[in-house]
Image 1 (cartoon, rainbow, N blue to C red):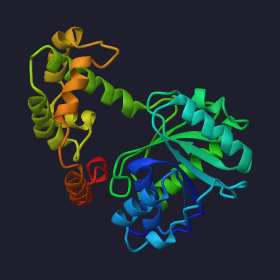
Image 2 (image 1 turned 90 degrees about the vertical axis):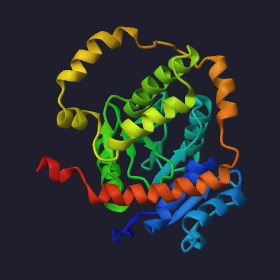
Image 3 (image 1 turned 120 degrees about the vertical axis):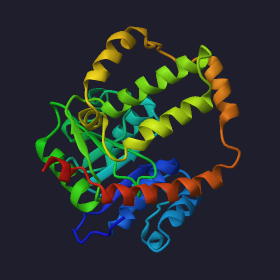
Length: 292
C-alpha cells in the first residue's frame, strides 16, 4: 500500500483479533500515529510486525485502558455482539472528548441501536473492513439521519486521501455488504444441506465465476457488460425458489468444522500474498476509465 504525504491525526483503535491488528497495520503503513487498545498485547505486536515490520516500533500498545483518551479519531473493531459494542461506546464516552469521532464495525446491527449507547449519537458511525485491511481497498462507511455531516465528510476524506481506500457510503444505517454476503451464503447453505452440491463445488463455482470478474467489476457493471436480458429471464423463474432460511443449519456448522484448513498459518501467508497481487491487478484496471 502506498504511503501517504497527507498529515493524518493520531488515531486510537480498540479491538482484538486479526482484523483489528490489520487495521492498525494499515494506519501505520499510512504513517499515522496509532494507539491500539487490545487485551492481548503480545499477539497484536506479532501480527502487526508480520504485516508492517518497518513501522511496528511506532505502534503504541498501552498495557491498561487510559483514564483519558485524547484522540479525536477512534476506531472500534469487535465481534458481532451488540452488548460488546455498546459497552465500548459507553466506556469511550467516559474518557474521550465529546467531539471525537467513533467509527465501529457493524454488519448486522443497525447503526441507530449503537448510537443510543452514546451521549453524542451524531459522532458514532459504522465502519466495516475487509481482511487484510492493510492490503485491500474495501471500506464501508455507514451513516444515518443522526450523523453529523462534518464527521461524515472527514471520514470520507481520510479514507480516500490518507488510507488510500476505495470507500462507499450508505446512509440507511445498515450494512449493504453484509446483506449481499448473507444472501449468497444462505443459498450456499441451502444447496449443500439439501444435497444439490458439495462445499467444494460451491467454492469452485464462486471462485471460477464471480471470483473471476468481481475484482474487475461489481454485479451491476458486470450485467451491463454481459447484457441484462438473460438475468431477467433467470431471476423470473429462480427467485421464488431461493432460500429464505433465518439460521445456519446444524449440519452445515458441523461440516464447516471438518472443512476448515489444517494449516491456518500457511493459509495466512497465502492470503496476504494473494491480496497484494489482487491489489496490483485492481490498480492496473481501475473502474473510473470505464465511466469517463
